[in-house]
Image 1 (cartoon, rainbow, N blue to C red):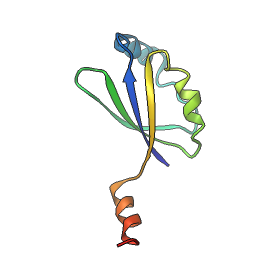
Image 2 (cartoon, rainbow, N blue to C red; image 1 turned 30 degrees about the vertical axis):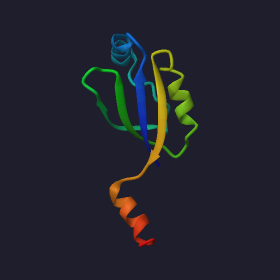
Image 3 (tube, one colour; image 1 turned 90 degrees about the vertical axis):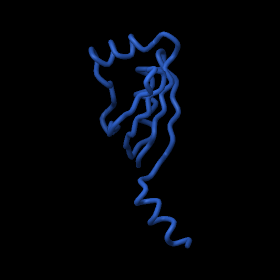
Length: 90
């Protein structure tokens, strides 16, 4: 299943986020897959598209980062999947 993860960086945390990322990587448990991400231009919000079959893996991953950012995790589907799901209702 696909998820949009919205990370809101805590005040002043951006340099430490990038230091930790450079030294430790994403620190994601096996089974949680990073697909892509986008960051706003003032480095306060990151949107990440991720995939997993086990939602509980997010808790393990977030434990590595919760001191630097707050998280919102939203289940999503592709536009093509949305069209297919809605076609049955049209």
